[in-house]
Length: 224
Image 1 (cartoon, rainbow, N blue to C red):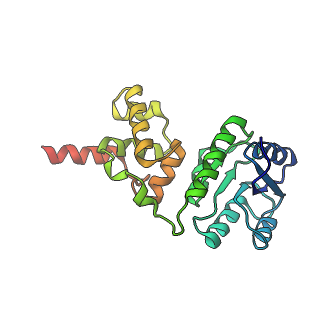
Image 2 (cartoon, one colour; image 1 turned 90 degrees about the vertical axis):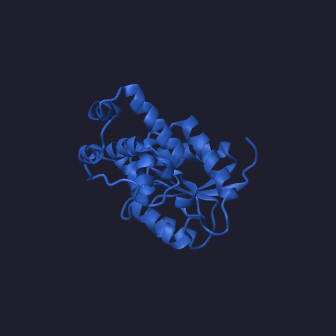
Protein backbone atom coordinates (compact mmCIF):
# COMPACT_ATOMS: atom_id res chain seq x y z
CA UNK A 1 0.00 0.00 0.00
CA UNK A 2 1.80 3.07 -1.28
CA UNK A 3 1.16 6.79 -0.86
CA UNK A 4 -2.22 8.14 -1.94
CA UNK A 5 -2.29 9.29 -5.55
CA UNK A 6 -5.93 10.32 -5.97
CA UNK A 7 -9.13 11.40 -4.25
CA UNK A 8 -12.47 9.64 -3.92
CA UNK A 9 -15.60 11.36 -2.64
CA UNK A 10 -17.42 8.96 -0.30
CA UNK A 11 -21.03 9.81 0.57
CA UNK A 12 -22.49 7.57 3.28
CA UNK A 13 -24.34 8.60 6.44
CA UNK A 14 -23.29 5.40 8.25
CA UNK A 15 -19.93 6.10 9.87
CA UNK A 16 -18.91 2.43 10.18
CA UNK A 17 -19.57 1.74 6.50
CA UNK A 18 -17.76 4.93 5.55
CA UNK A 19 -14.68 3.98 7.57
CA UNK A 20 -14.64 0.53 5.95
CA UNK A 21 -14.71 2.09 2.50
CA UNK A 22 -11.95 4.52 3.47
CA UNK A 23 -9.68 1.66 4.59
CA UNK A 24 -10.31 -0.29 1.40
CA UNK A 25 -9.68 2.74 -0.79
CA UNK A 26 -6.32 3.18 0.92
CA UNK A 27 -5.24 -0.15 -0.60
CA UNK A 28 -5.83 1.44 -4.00
CA UNK A 29 -3.77 4.52 -3.06
CA UNK A 30 -6.91 6.64 -2.93
CA UNK A 31 -7.72 9.12 -0.18
CA UNK A 32 -11.36 9.43 0.86
CA UNK A 33 -13.20 12.72 1.19
CA UNK A 34 -16.17 11.75 3.43
CA UNK A 35 -19.57 13.44 3.40
CA UNK A 36 -22.88 12.23 4.78
CA UNK A 37 -25.63 13.89 2.72
CA UNK A 38 -26.59 14.22 -0.91
CA UNK A 39 -26.52 17.98 -0.67
CA UNK A 40 -22.92 17.81 0.56
CA UNK A 41 -21.97 15.73 -2.48
CA UNK A 42 -23.34 18.29 -4.91
CA UNK A 43 -21.79 21.20 -3.03
CA UNK A 44 -18.38 19.50 -2.80
CA UNK A 45 -18.11 18.54 -6.48
CA UNK A 46 -18.88 22.16 -7.35
CA UNK A 47 -15.71 23.23 -5.53
CA UNK A 48 -13.15 20.52 -6.30
CA UNK A 49 -12.54 17.56 -8.63
CA UNK A 50 -12.34 13.86 -7.75
CA UNK A 51 -11.01 10.75 -9.43
CA UNK A 52 -14.19 8.85 -8.59
CA UNK A 53 -17.29 9.06 -6.41
CA UNK A 54 -19.10 6.54 -4.19
CA UNK A 55 -22.66 7.33 -3.14
CA UNK A 56 -24.89 5.35 -0.76
CA UNK A 57 -28.48 4.78 -1.87
CA UNK A 58 -30.08 5.77 1.44
CA UNK A 59 -28.61 9.23 1.98
CA UNK A 60 -30.79 11.54 4.09
CA UNK A 61 -32.90 14.20 2.37
CA UNK A 62 -31.59 13.66 -1.18
CA UNK A 63 -31.31 9.97 -2.12
CA UNK A 64 -28.26 8.45 -3.74
CA UNK A 65 -30.28 7.83 -6.92
CA UNK A 66 -31.12 11.52 -7.23
CA UNK A 67 -27.49 12.46 -6.57
CA UNK A 68 -26.38 10.03 -9.27
CA UNK A 69 -28.87 11.57 -11.70
CA UNK A 70 -27.59 15.09 -10.94
CA UNK A 71 -23.95 14.04 -11.30
CA UNK A 72 -24.57 12.40 -14.67
CA UNK A 73 -26.40 15.52 -15.87
CA UNK A 74 -23.41 17.62 -14.90
CA UNK A 75 -20.43 15.40 -15.77
CA UNK A 76 -21.82 12.95 -18.32
CA UNK A 77 -20.00 9.63 -18.50
CA UNK A 78 -16.56 11.04 -17.73
CA UNK A 79 -16.78 10.78 -13.92
CA UNK A 80 -16.60 7.22 -12.50
CA UNK A 81 -19.46 6.70 -10.03
CA UNK A 82 -20.24 3.73 -7.81
CA UNK A 83 -23.45 3.22 -5.85
CA UNK A 84 -23.44 1.58 -2.41
CA UNK A 85 -26.54 -0.38 -1.41
CA UNK A 86 -28.79 0.47 1.50
CA UNK A 87 -27.93 -0.80 4.98
CA UNK A 88 -30.98 -3.03 4.97
CA UNK A 89 -29.46 -5.05 2.16
CA UNK A 90 -30.14 -3.89 -1.38
CA UNK A 91 -31.70 -6.29 -3.84
CA UNK A 92 -31.29 -6.64 -7.55
CA UNK A 93 -33.93 -3.96 -8.21
CA UNK A 94 -31.73 -1.33 -6.54
CA UNK A 95 -28.76 -2.51 -8.57
CA UNK A 96 -30.72 -2.36 -11.83
CA UNK A 97 -32.03 1.12 -10.95
CA UNK A 98 -28.51 2.35 -10.20
CA UNK A 99 -27.11 0.97 -13.44
CA UNK A 100 -29.99 2.37 -15.48
CA UNK A 101 -29.27 5.80 -14.02
CA UNK A 102 -25.65 5.53 -15.12
CA UNK A 103 -23.73 4.01 -12.20
CA UNK A 104 -20.51 2.26 -13.19
CA UNK A 105 -20.59 -0.14 -10.23
CA UNK A 106 -22.94 -1.26 -7.47
CA UNK A 107 -21.75 -2.49 -4.06
CA UNK A 108 -24.26 -4.14 -1.69
CA UNK A 109 -23.82 -3.85 2.07
CA UNK A 110 -22.10 -5.20 4.02
CA UNK A 111 -19.12 -4.30 1.87
CA UNK A 112 -17.18 -7.39 0.73
CA UNK A 113 -13.52 -6.35 0.93
CA UNK A 114 -11.97 -8.47 -1.83
CA UNK A 115 -14.80 -7.84 -4.27
CA UNK A 116 -14.85 -4.13 -3.52
CA UNK A 117 -11.10 -3.69 -4.03
CA UNK A 118 -11.11 -5.70 -7.27
CA UNK A 119 -14.00 -3.77 -8.79
CA UNK A 120 -12.74 -0.40 -7.60
CA UNK A 121 -9.32 -1.12 -9.08
CA UNK A 122 -10.98 -1.91 -12.41
CA UNK A 123 -13.12 1.22 -12.16
CA UNK A 124 -10.10 3.41 -11.44
CA UNK A 125 -8.19 1.87 -14.35
CA UNK A 126 -11.11 2.28 -16.74
CA UNK A 127 -11.37 5.94 -15.73
CA UNK A 128 -7.81 6.50 -16.93
CA UNK A 129 -8.70 5.03 -20.31
CA UNK A 130 -11.96 6.92 -20.85
CA UNK A 131 -12.02 8.96 -24.08
CA UNK A 132 -12.47 12.69 -24.13
CA UNK A 133 -15.86 12.22 -25.81
CA UNK A 134 -18.34 9.67 -24.42
CA UNK A 135 -18.74 6.46 -26.39
CA UNK A 136 -22.25 5.11 -26.78
CA UNK A 137 -22.86 1.85 -24.97
CA UNK A 138 -24.51 0.57 -28.15
CA UNK A 139 -21.15 0.70 -29.95
CA UNK A 140 -19.46 -1.36 -27.26
CA UNK A 141 -22.05 -4.08 -26.66
CA UNK A 142 -22.38 -7.04 -28.99
CA UNK A 143 -26.10 -7.46 -28.33
CA UNK A 144 -26.86 -7.77 -32.05
CA UNK A 145 -25.28 -11.23 -31.85
CA UNK A 146 -27.78 -12.49 -29.27
CA UNK A 147 -29.61 -15.55 -30.52
CA UNK A 148 -33.43 -15.75 -30.33
CA UNK A 149 -33.11 -18.17 -27.40
CA UNK A 150 -30.71 -15.83 -25.57
CA UNK A 151 -33.19 -13.00 -26.03
CA UNK A 152 -35.89 -15.21 -24.53
CA UNK A 153 -33.67 -15.97 -21.54
CA UNK A 154 -32.79 -12.29 -21.14
CA UNK A 155 -36.47 -11.30 -21.30
CA UNK A 156 -37.32 -13.77 -18.53
CA UNK A 157 -34.39 -12.50 -16.46
CA UNK A 158 -35.75 -8.96 -16.83
CA UNK A 159 -39.10 -10.23 -15.53
CA UNK A 160 -37.38 -11.37 -12.33
CA UNK A 161 -37.43 -15.12 -12.95
CA UNK A 162 -34.62 -17.20 -11.40
CA UNK A 163 -32.61 -19.61 -13.51
CA UNK A 164 -34.60 -22.67 -12.40
CA UNK A 165 -37.90 -21.11 -13.49
CA UNK A 166 -36.39 -19.94 -16.77
CA UNK A 167 -35.26 -23.50 -17.50
CA UNK A 168 -38.73 -24.82 -16.67
CA UNK A 169 -40.49 -22.16 -18.75
CA UNK A 170 -38.32 -22.84 -21.81
CA UNK A 171 -38.23 -26.63 -21.31
CA UNK A 172 -34.44 -26.70 -21.06
CA UNK A 173 -32.05 -27.94 -18.38
CA UNK A 174 -30.69 -25.70 -15.65
CA UNK A 175 -27.20 -26.20 -17.05
CA UNK A 176 -28.33 -25.03 -20.49
CA UNK A 177 -30.00 -21.97 -18.95
CA UNK A 178 -26.78 -21.18 -17.10
CA UNK A 179 -24.81 -21.46 -20.34
CA UNK A 180 -27.20 -19.06 -22.08
CA UNK A 181 -26.81 -16.56 -19.22
CA UNK A 182 -23.02 -16.77 -19.35
CA UNK A 183 -23.06 -16.07 -23.10
CA UNK A 184 -25.47 -13.16 -22.62
CA UNK A 185 -23.16 -11.56 -20.05
CA UNK A 186 -20.17 -11.98 -22.36
CA UNK A 187 -21.94 -10.50 -25.38
CA UNK A 188 -23.31 -7.53 -23.43
CA UNK A 189 -20.03 -6.91 -21.59
CA UNK A 190 -21.84 -7.23 -18.25
CA UNK A 191 -20.31 -8.58 -15.04
CA UNK A 192 -23.63 -9.51 -13.40
CA UNK A 193 -27.18 -10.49 -14.34
CA UNK A 194 -28.48 -7.21 -12.94
CA UNK A 195 -26.08 -5.24 -15.14
CA UNK A 196 -27.10 -7.29 -18.19
CA UNK A 197 -30.77 -6.51 -17.45
CA UNK A 198 -29.98 -2.81 -17.05
CA UNK A 199 -28.13 -2.71 -20.38
CA UNK A 200 -30.96 -4.63 -22.08
CA UNK A 201 -33.66 -2.30 -20.77
CA UNK A 202 -31.64 0.83 -21.53
CA UNK A 203 -30.83 -0.24 -25.09
CA UNK A 204 -34.31 -1.62 -25.79
CA UNK A 205 -33.01 -5.14 -26.38
CA UNK A 206 -35.93 -6.68 -24.47
CA UNK A 207 -39.39 -5.65 -23.31
CA UNK A 208 -39.98 -7.14 -19.84
CA UNK A 209 -43.76 -6.89 -20.36
CA UNK A 210 -43.66 -9.02 -23.49
CA UNK A 211 -44.59 -12.67 -23.18
CA UNK A 212 -41.92 -15.16 -24.19
CA UNK A 213 -44.63 -17.77 -24.73
CA UNK A 214 -46.42 -15.57 -27.28
CA UNK A 215 -43.13 -14.90 -29.09
CA UNK A 216 -42.39 -18.61 -29.25
CA UNK A 217 -45.91 -19.40 -30.45
CA UNK A 218 -45.68 -16.77 -33.15
CA UNK A 219 -42.34 -18.13 -34.32
CA UNK A 220 -43.77 -21.65 -34.37
CA UNK A 221 -46.83 -20.55 -36.34
CA UNK A 222 -44.68 -18.83 -38.96
CA UNK A 223 -42.86 -22.11 -39.55
CA UNK A 224 -46.07 -24.06 -40.22
